[in-house]
Image (cartoon, rainbow, N blue to C red; front, side, top):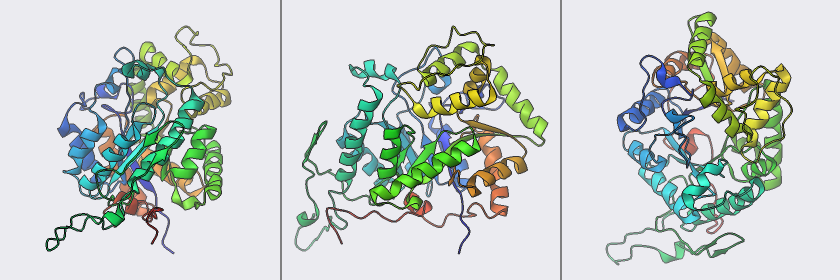
Length: 435
């Protein structure tokens, strides 16, 4: 039996995943640039990564985390990347709270065709209430957002299935272009949506684009277990990560799915150094750029409570989970309790990787840690969050990836051309056109 291997994605957010990574020497200081994102994609493809993932938001954080604010609309950007990459999966966030299912289904079906089968949709419910005024709406509470998301994802998948393989026949001798028996309407009428269908684009090269999710609340986990192909998890502790991994996988049989049909990829920011001290010095330098203002704003968003007035050297108390993002809040508050952290400590943690896991060390240290998590049931791979681009990402691809390959933990070359192929997933059956 072939050795199980990791899946690797790169999380591209602004000029880097550290809130002040753009201040590092040689770092990109603008994300409103096609050459910048093309360069990042070339690095990922050089490293044989499964996926490049674009995080997105529907509000501007001009006064708190500005380096994450100025960015292109993700489908537009990924469509441009489809023309300049050949194997790399292309994923992006699109909200189920502030979009329409027909549009989302069409966007990602188009991207799947343009990329020859490399599209992925991160189905999110938009946790930040500041998005609502941009659409003239009230931000729905957590439970309501997930009720909408459940139906939204079903409609999108249904629209992708309205075309069978081979529906476009283009018969020159008869003049028949579409085999009408292989196209059907959706005729969905639900609690939140009424959608006729079908899409005006044929069956996707992957059958369906890959579905990504990151929810860790009870409704989010159920939605992921039922529909997701990849889950981005928020972790800080190995034992908690193993428990969460097992809990998600154990839910899948109730939906007729096998555990290996989902890849769990924890987000991790690796800080690399020739020595452990050099790695620590790099992290300290990054942290020296964090201001109390931008860290407090981001932490307040994660915890759903204004923390700007809390004394920095007081211990973090027990707080209820917010109505925003359960995953980040749960991981951060658990770590704060476990390590008896102060608000200053939590500010620094948030500034470093927005609440994601940070590891600092040598190539061997980072490879050892990733291997341990991968082999002990905490992860199927990792979503790499470089602190800045391009240097921090170059370092991981040029130094850590070869070490993972030496250990037999990561591919040495692409063996598939689609994202579904990279993930080892079969083309999903089409319930409307059973074979």
